[in-house]
Each structure stands twice: as structure tokens, then as C-alpha cells.
Amino acid sequence: MEIDHNSSMPLHAQAEMILRNLIETEEYKNGKLLPNEVTLSKQLGIARNTLRQAINKLVYEGLLIRKKGVGTKVARKSIRGGVKNWLSFSQEMKFLGIEVRNFELHLSHKKASGEISSFFDIEEDTRCFVLERVRGNKDYPFVYFISYFNPSLPLTGEEDYVQPLYKMLETCYGIVVMTSREEVFARLAGDEIAEKLEIDPDDPILIRKRFVYDQDGKPVEYNIGYYRADSFTYTIEASR
Image (cartoon, rainbow, N blue to C red):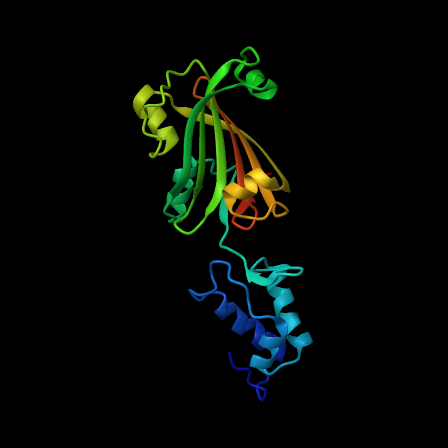
């Protein structure tokens, strides 16, 4: 936390380097608020405008989040998903080296809405087996999943839903998922989702709908995931 005023490196660049090192420390890397600009500029011995240059650079890169009336905090490490690697959530997390924790897990039978019944080609209000899970890492939840399953599948609710879902379907019933079509959009969390993800109702979330088919093109799962926007990045790769 020291600025060298005799260095040829600009002060804002030195401040940026210090902040980069700071936000990688154990104390800050999981989303802690930085000291306010007045305090931090005094600690570094530089003007607030100089400090703000450094902060703005890291905000632009997505490493810091500035919130009016709250302050500047470190952005949580993002989970990356996309159309190229549509693994199950457990497989995605294992690939990234993240240990998954279930914060909530509910099984039920619910009536299918218009979009869901159309996807499965069933009568509206037909009851489907539904799996709801709030999942995250060891520190906090970052996604709320709701999965509707085709009522023709022999699911009983007695299966082991702690193991990867698609692995369980293949092992128990020989159902091999092959194709996924997705829709991604954003909105504010709202009260219900905010409570589950431990965020504010006015915080943004990313919504990811996934339509999953087996190797014969039969619809298997209608899944909708509500992701914390500060913890998930959706990537798209296109080739010509």
C-alpha cells in the first residue's frame, strides 16, 4: 500500500497495481467493500482523482463494482458457461475446480404451464416431476434452478439428486441427453429470487432457460436457472 512518488511510473498506474494486488488477497477476493475513496487516497498519499482513475479502470474490467450509496467492492469470481460447453451444472463446476454445495433441494409435482406443456407436447396443467435447487460454492449461493421433467420419464423422487443429474439419468434409466437449446436474458432479481440468492431485490440476475433433448430428439428437461449477475458470465463462440 505504498506509492513511490519518485518512480517514473504514473501515480494512477501504481495505484492500479496496488489495487490489483489488494483484491486478490484472501480478505477482499470474495466481494468485500474497499475502504472509501477519502480513506484510501490518504493511505496511498495521492489525490482522489488519481485514485479514481485506477478504480475506474478496474470497474471497466469488471474486477470492481461501484454501487451508489454503498461503495466500491470486489467483484466475485465469475462462473463461465456457454453454448459451446453445455455440461450439467455439477460438471461445469467440477471443470472449474469449484466444490458445489446445495443450499436447498426440493422435489414436487407441479402443473405444467403453457410453454412447458408445449415443449413436452402434453396437455396444459399436466403434472410434471419438478426438481428445485439453490446451489453455490461453500461461501454463498449463486444460482436457483427449477427443472421440469417430461412426465413420461420413470422418475420417482427416490433417486440420488446429489450426484450430477445427467449422470443419474443415464445410470438409472439409460437416458442419454444429447442436445440443449438455450435462451439467456437479464432482469432484476425481485423479492423471491433475491431471498434465495442472498442479494437485494434490485440487483441484476441472469436467467438461462435450457431445453434438453435425448439422443432421439425426445424432450427430457425444461430447466430455468436464475444466476447472480456478479457470479456468472455467459460466453458465446462463433465460427465462420
